[in-house]
Length: 254
Image (cartoon, rainbow, N blue to C red; front, side, top):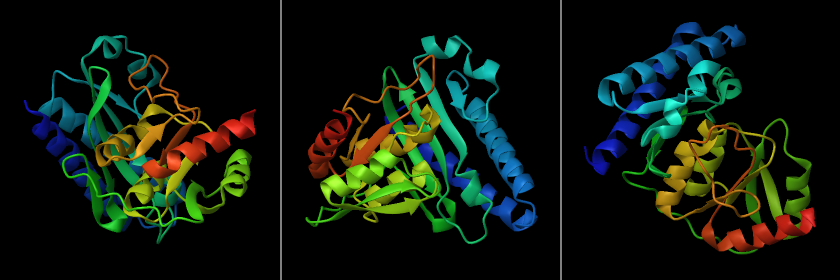
């Protein structure tokens, strides 16, 4: 089993899950948002769990759609390899006709670090992977853009944007926001409203492979495969902006 194999597995599974989700959208339509969300979550989770059981039977899996008992399984904490997946990141956007800011996350945590990952953006027709990390754009200088939640941008991020001279850009799922940093639609993503490991593992794996900055909002390292999968805040940015963003966050919390 090579590292390249794991990159390919992550990309292939994220792609296939994404294609299946597009089929669910076409089959069900958008009249019943709750039913569409439920079927999207369920079908993608089942596909990914069955595929990983077949392709990587010795590895553990942490999925957003797992039961509480499965998430708390102590064998995960002693495993050397754990796949961290979000079968459907951005169910709200998935259930809204015309929206493309939702994703599928597949990441591999191995011996304390993110070793491989892929973020499929099916409605955008692209997948970002650690196999071929995207080339980071350069900051143009002057005002820049920070991706925030469509529905609940944290008040402190609004204050931060004013402090550092940035504009806020609402985007749907966490995966879509981090991907937007890597593709040049925004220059940073700051979040402190509560998340879990599966919300960021795959996009952070790709971001780190691309050379972007990724940390907690206090600058601490992001840690995965923890007993408590809560990972409540995150900063992802172009590397040249990280110092000023972290300084601004410290000033706001002083």
